[in-house]
Image 1 (cartoon, rainbow, N blue to C red):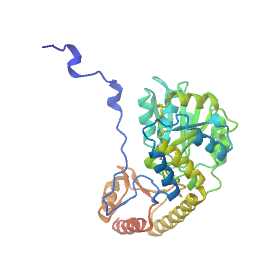
Image 2: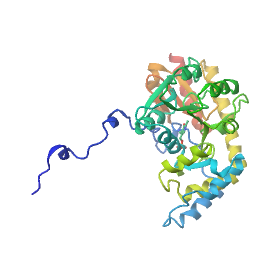
Image 3: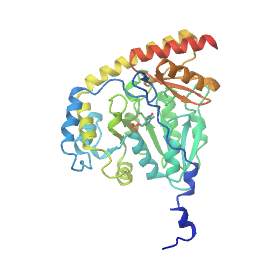
Image 4: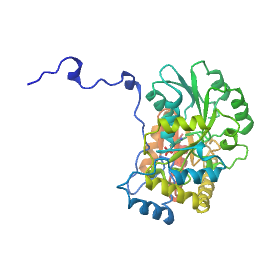
Length: 362
Ligand code: PMP
């Protein structure tokens, strides 16, 4: 019989800093008879051609995928008019975001982001051993770019700018963003997270890919999960200058993007017209939902994404429960508010009816 001594008896020694890191909380799943408006997904099923390309790729899943994602990288480079060396793909844009943090920040370094914003930013920062520096949104639910500039220290290595912001939907305008980018020291990486780019209709919001071109410290994060409807296949990408893109290739988990995902993403880019028509319908629904909420007396941010945000404070969980009881699953941020994705018309209607009844009781 062997005896185990010391701390080994308790099992492996884990990094103590993990104790302070919450597990990522995904939007709740919905039962078969409920609408899932909790994860900003695309409600449309895959286009037949996109599905076929994934099914065809499934025939060789005994093989590893193309690690360089050559076809997808080239298609993206063409689509955006950037060198292929500037494109780095990953297992969803969240994993590319994590690689960006791992590429720039470690213990003692700081990562700035607005708060509330995408829930993964503080988590991936702490996983890298770095320190999150959340900067509160303004009362208008927008990035406080001046406060974010004021938060920069000698230890700042990366700044996330989520445009439009998840979960509020507010978007930053060109002049404001340019002023910010000009003021950030050139040795700090600014990540423009544009997961919802295709839903933007306000022409005052700039395209990050135009801003990145002559700024070596700026990169853009995009995803196939939202407008392109491939959330379940996990594929996202960054457009970044070469040193950053090369660092991303080093810090990414090898073979992270399956061949199914790569081929479906290429097929999606080729079917872009059909997909962007769907996006247009969702934007029309967003306009309808926003107008209806405003008509009910709610104060609603002009969302440039595929969701709307209701600041409900202490009534957040009650509102989410009312939606759940009515058959729509929404995303509560306890004590703050509720984010509701724009989905099928019928689901949106149930949400609106619930919001109206709730409003009358306030
Ligand atoms: N960035 C933002 C702002 C998001 O809201 C999300 C998804 N919720 C992501 C990145 C990550 O998406 P994915 O990993 O599916 O590309």
